[in-house]
Amino acid sequence: MSPLDPAGAGSGTTGRAAGGTTGGAAGNAALTGRWQEVMMDNFGTPRLPLVEGRGCRVRDAEGNEYLDFFAGIAVNALGHAHPAVVRAVCGQIASLGHVSNLFVAEPTVRLAERLLELAGREGRVYFSNSGAEAVEAAFKIGRLTGRTRMVATAGGFHGRTMGALALTGQSAKQRPFLPLPGEVVHVPYGDAAALRGAVTEDTALLVLEPVQGENGVVVPPPGYLRAAREITAATGTLLVLDEVQTGIGRTGHWFAAQAEGVEADVVTLAKGLGGGLPIGATLAFGAAARLLTPGAHGSTFSGNPVVCAAALAVLDTIERDGLLERVARAGRRLRRGLEDLAHPLVREVRGAGLLVGVVLEGDLAARVQQAAQDRGLLVNAAVPGIVRLAPPLIVSDHEVDAFVEGFGAALSAVRAGTDARAGTGIDPRAGAGAWAGADTGAGAGSAAERSPSPHCNTPSR
Image (cartoon, rainbow, N blue to C red; front, side, top):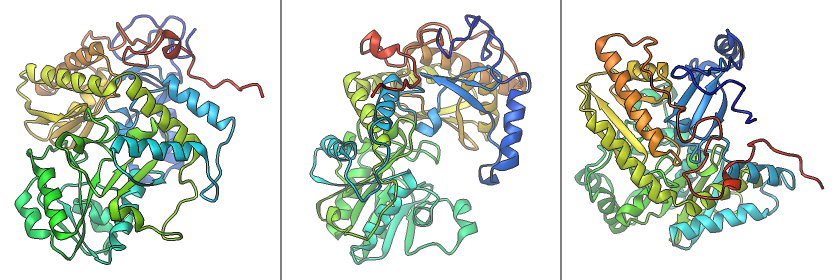
């Protein structure tokens, strides 16, 4: 029996396991209460405790099931408990878990080689533990040019550590921590003329997201990234592309900027690269690759072998299972399905690949997020008027269609003012990818690759 298919969980109402609960009648409240007792309040109180996951589905502490269309903020590229990631992690931790940056580990070198191959260019890689850390490394690289002025965009998000926060164009996040490292100028996103006016021969770097994710999936006009490349090349300024959210297949390309043929001086990665494990990567090319010298930057956990093994499994699976093409198709299906709802609360559906923003008629995102959760769907209220979607790259057509139907019902409940706990009769568990025999891939690969238990087995030595 699958550890995520308890006895009796074969049918039932939307979003609730039929075979009892995982954490008891008060499981969610109890676990949430424990969080509130011991955790700092920087996140507030999370809206839902989760205890299990498989593929595109998760369960809370009371056995309720959800179709996960946010994937841990675009992190779980292969969904939850993907066998390839589990095998890679279990195998690596059983042989060599951590060596620090004082020693060389093969998975670390291999991952750096692989990322540069995917970029199609010679360069150097620095590994860290998060997207913010990857951006901090880029910030330091910018300072090492001998210039101090930097240009970023309004609404952009690059992290919450001090250098990354200085680049983040969201004053509410910055205000409590002023003064921040300078000199950073923010210009309107998507405006090439504003870039021309701000980027000069005194500018160390220009940092851009190919798509602004945290700001509500804002897609720039065609040619914007090419214009940024031309402007920075003319002024000797480093072009830094923050691909923390858009990279590693999220938009249907290894790097979103590849869609426009743009090559940056520095690229930052994180989120989907580790398949659920914490990793950041800063890729630098040309002269930028030689600016960090011994002692200039570092991290104890940089290039941890276990995390690098997981990342290699992610890259191998995306390539083997043709997930870049799959993402492009699934993204079109998702956006078309949402548009075809023709719902009066939806003003626009935008995005790239499986990074999608649903722009609402009014500041209703929090209510829509809750109404969707009540129907077994997990989404993100990115900003007050926009819902962000970032499902695992392995999401199936059936799951996309089930999501669209359930999301339409959530929108209608909000419009009618009947948000709370209104069932729809849709069971996101039904069909391909259900808990029982869940398909944790996109349909490619052998049955043996898709079906093993997600739990580690202690290897014989």
